[in-house]
Structures are given as structure tokens and as C-alpha cells.
Amino acid sequence: MSPKLEDYDVMGIIGSGSFGTCYKVRNRNTNEYFVWKAIDYGNLTESRKQLLVSEVNLLSELNHPNIVKYYNRILHKETTTLYIIMEWCQGGDLLSVIKHAKKLGTWLEEGFIWRALYQTGRALQACHTRLGRVTVLHRDIKPANIFLDHRGNIKLGDFGLARVLQGDNEYSQTIIGTPYYMSPEVVKGTKYNRKSDIWALGCLIYELCALVQPFSGSDIQELYNRIPDRYSENLVKMIQLMLTVQHEFRPTIEMVLHHPVVVTNVSKYE
Ligand code: ADP
Ligand code: MG
Image (cartoon, rainbow, N blue to C red; front, side, top):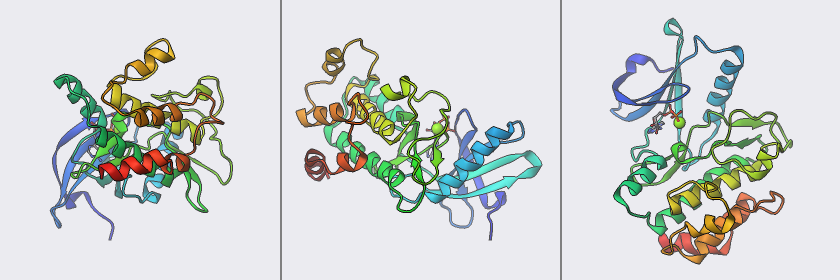
């Protein structure tokens, strides 16, 4: 049976984005909490509508413990609103975590950062290596798009700009918007590829350590000087590896996840 709006109670607004507004809702039958994203498609151009359809179809195909779970959608034609029902990530997003740490003048625990690296990496692995299926590139990895559940587990979300790539074609067709963490090859006009997601992961882990975005400083030495001494050499080494300028030499997600340093530290902090 397809779900209806009447099955849910709206508990409150979480926030608004470029595409719609997110609400916390509760299912009346099960009392479970969800988030629904209400998107008014009435004023969308045909190409934006297509983007929306592909976002929703993509979400429904991705099933992974570190990817925000998509449950359902409700199309409300009377108000030209599409409701996307997804997992409620109680811990909020990493942007808030960063802002909070900055405000308190504290640093994030190294164990938390290794877990973020590993679990975001696992989510990317699920997108990059889908056996027999089309590859998915996230394309917009950034703190605001990474959530935490009630246990503090990472959930990659907001595939708003993610594109589905057909078959073995490694490169996506168009660039939509400007990625928050733009890799050198994308700056130079090369198409966004899997390695560009790795670059973004490197930037994310950097930002969790330094609490500022990378590449706001001018030179590379200054860049790494902004990572506090409290973090291990191994963590800095992994960041440097993911931030390899030439994408041909940058590791794949498999190489990152199987790196001895990652394996050791993830088990250490688990
Ligand atoms: P944006 O374009 O800013 O990403 P969104 O519509 O994606 O806008 O999100 C709006 C707000 O709702 C943000 O504060 C985001 O952190 C929050 N949010 C989005 N999805 C979830 C979720 N599944 N669980 C908890 N909070 C969410
Ligand atoms: Mg978002």
C-alpha cells in the first residue's frame, strides 16, 4: 500500500535548503520518526524536474548502513509537492559539529575522525563499486551533507547533485554547480570522476582536523601547518594521500579503505 500524507504527523521544521524544506515527522501507525523533504516542483523547469526524478530514483537504489536511508515518496499533485521520506539522522550534520567545536574552542577526537573517514569511505565505496550497476558519484561531499544517527554513525546524504553514470563510462557528462571541495582536475576543466570524490573526502577529513576548509591558505606548507599537533602522523599522511594533486596517482576508495594505517586505526578506535 502506498503511503499517504495522513499517515504522518509533522513535528516541526528542521531547515530549508536550495531544493526544499526538511521536516521531522512521525508515522502515526508505528510512532517512528522520519524526515521528509518537501519539494515544490510546480515552478521547476523541465531539466530541474528531470534532476529531481533522478535524485529520487538514485536514493531508492542505495541501501547501505552509511547512506541516509530513503523509505518512500508521496506525490501531492494538488499542491505540486513531492515528499521524500527518509531516515531521521538524530545527530544532525557535520557542519554543526564543526561549528560547535569552533565555538567551544575544542578539537574533535581523533577516533571520531578515523570513524568519519572509514564510514564515509564505506558509503563512497558502495556508490563507486556497485557490481553490475551504474556508478554513482556523490559530487557534493561537504560537512553539511554528512549526517550522524543516534549512535554517532556516519550517514552520507543529499545526493541532490549526484549523477548516475551509464555502464563503464567513468566520467560524468556535465558539471552542475560548483563542488564545495573542488579538485585540481575539476578546476582545470577535466570531468568530475571517482577520484574527485576522493579529493573531497580528503578535504572533509582535513576540515574535521583543522576546523577550517583546506586551500584557504596560500601554500601547501601552511595548509598542513593548520592541522593541530594533537593528531597523529598517520592521520595527516592519509589526508595528504587523498589530496594528491594528480588524480591518476590519487588512491581509489578501495585503496583508502584497505590502507594498513586505516585498518589499524579504525579497529583501534572501534
Ligand atoms: P541544504 O540545501 O541546506 O542541504 P536540505 O533541504 O538538504 O538543505 O536540509 C535542510 C536541513 O535539514 C539541514 O539543516 C539538514 O542538516 C537537515 N537535514 C536534511 N536531511 C536530514 C536528515 N535525514 N536527518 C536530519 N536532518 C536532516
Ligand atoms: Mg542538504
